[in-house]
Length: 419
Ligand code: ATP
Ligand code: MG
Image (cartoon, rainbow, N blue to C red; front, side, top):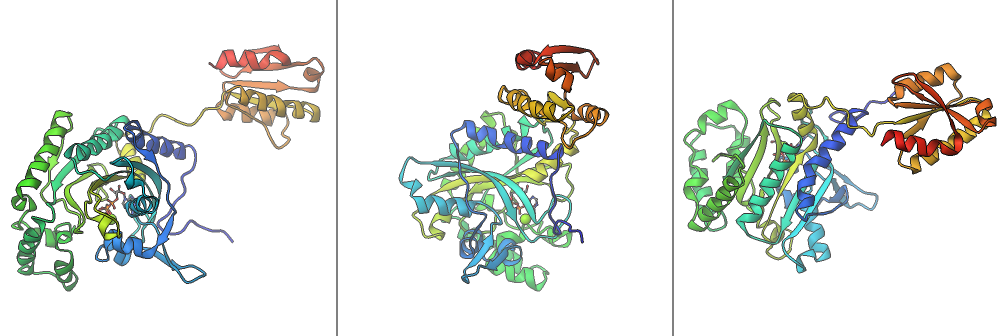
């Protein structure tokens, strides 16, 4: 019997997996420099955390969650996103009672039961950053700038930034009502009509062309912002402009829930077809209260690692091999020489030289073939006769030049050569 990875999941294998690691690291390097601290939360949480923190009416909660009872009958859910967990952890440990904003970043697997296709998986990887407990347009701008820097550090040039404001508790209700009135007049299916009543902003996000065609005259939130929201948004925009960050105002960009407020943004890449979003984020001033906490105005983003990798592929940026390259490969013949080689390899690694050796009792020919394939520059060959002479043969695999080096000196000699 042979097994396959479950539908919508896949394995990252070398050397590609090394490139994915590099993508992940590059995306979070800017926030780490900006004082964001690493947080790791459980892969599963109380189902209610997501029901409330993501929202019952969202596709994520209504269709896409991996929910299961544990053996004690608790309902648990594999996290579909990480913001709710981060906020849960902040509230649970009282981090918000210290210096604000609390700045955190994470990196981890997310799970959504989605229609699996290229760029849309059931198990995927996000990195994210959250700044909790401050209402300041500079903080929104900071996060956007740091996201832009992450993509730029990878060499991506076709990531576009879309920006909008969703208003706040003062101005959103009137906008929501105006939008509902407009939407009720359209020719829509029953599901979408139901959505108008619970989550009307999400209708603007409907990807179907027949729905989009009817939305041309829909009222836009920008035309309904109160003075405070307008001023806040203008400040975010002007800070981004001053930082040299290009953005496009997208008055249709929404998040469906009431606790998302003001700044909302998305990073899209044009080389990815319909799975174009490589990241998204915004302000969620009302979420803490939704989870039973105090008011804690916050802003954050999540970037899709798998999709960013696909964007790199689309831009032809994956040529370089980022794996920690082997520098030395040991080949030993005979049991005593093997034991000595095992220790020598260990010594080389401790000295910072990337080293591997032939395993599995191959003969000289097979072991030398392994050396050639390993990508190492040098082979160390140790036979019984070398061992008796306390020496080892050092072969430069690029020139085939071979020299004898005393065993006692070989670590120093190699350290000098690979530096
Ligand atoms: P989409 O509109 O593509 O479904 P989303 O709005 O659901 O995206 P978010 O919840 O904001 O996405 O997640 C942030 C990022 O995580 C997305 O921009 C995307 O890059 C990535 N992402 C989301 N869902 C998936 C998935 N199923 N497979 C791979 N990456 C994903
Ligand atoms: Mg989605």
